[in-house]
Image (cartoon, rainbow, N blue to C red; front, side, top):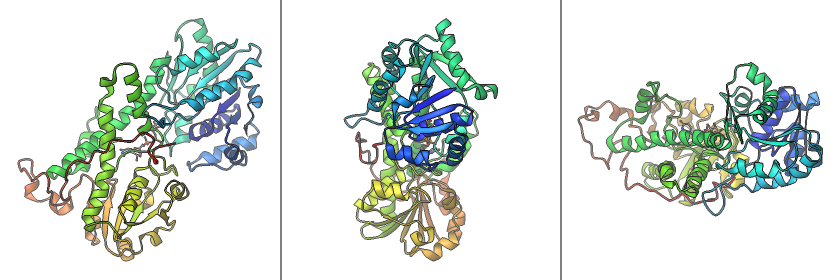
Length: 485
Ligand code: UGA
């Protein structure tokens, strides 16, 4: 089939290359000429394992190309919309302007099809009601139908998630009837290889499909904030959140995934999607129903503040002190620093007067661009040299596997703050480190008799984690520097 993908950011670029991989002829479009030039030259504009390979394969096959010119999309039978829907500058809601202007530009292309069956497929994350509103516009053109097909890919696994998704969701104006069948058959033809491999396909109304995506991200964010709330409790009573997570995760109904406590979630999706969900619920008069997501957001914010506070406790004040931050990306295997907890904490420490050096295997260029004045160092050994405190804030494999004896020889003082609950406390203690982690007791305290269920330790002065202090709960600011897309 001939397919277009409009908006080749993270989602769109991967989708375009993956569709070419499935054998379709694909034209990717973006208004960003630099991005188009890079993609057309076979260069990935972001770090994503396996992406450059399928991009180059698609270009070489002649089935994949990129353009900035809408007129070139005329032969396409199916147009995918992969545009970003960032948080609005003036509030929690989603900014749909990129999507709306793409629809405007597309209208002429659709009219030129002369009534031939054409499908427009939305993949962006949007508030419920958006698809119906947009369909009123595009379906005015004869032969055109709109379908909403949310995307669930994770950065770092984007290629795999696109080619082997858990499920395909089709949102339709009317999910049943002869018209629905024709629309479904057309998208089935695009995804034929996936369906043949047994990927489940669920058909539903527009609003339900939009809610599936919003609910999935809200649930994941809630799960992370849940375990981070328990981390706060662990700090108060002297428990170990990693053990709590391991034990409750063994219950199938709970599941072990997304229960890793630490500095919390970031990125271009979860934070802005829960805020857009809150805004949408309020607009529909059911704000109370999703009120708990505000708490999810606040717990997440508090972990960042607590990390900065704990760094201060470990050093007896951060001003003028040399601090090394391991990680800038919002998660490993990505160079994305949008609303990255690691970069946010590094920035806060810098603002508090610390001499901060940040290292990351992939994200330093993006980090330096986002936080002007940040000291970055690509080499791990050089970054560690002379550090009085080291913080592990993005769990790249090289940091998880760091040899504590080797690292101890480089730093000025062996103090480590594990912000991702990934380092083995005993191993680090044995190599002479003071290791502190969010929500975790130090090994010595973990085995003392006072750590029993019947003991009632002083909540504000845990021996391993120090005073918890008053909960710092800054209201998340819409459109903060580190939040904008
Ligand atoms: C998220 C969803 O997982 C995808 O399904 C969705 O398609 C995507 O958003 C989107 O809407 O486009 P992504 O932003 O790539 O994917 O990242 P996640 O893997 O969800 O991680 C988000 C954040 O949560 C990261 O900062 C990560 O470090 C943090 N996290 C994750 C934790 O703090 N603890 C965990 O246990 C898991």
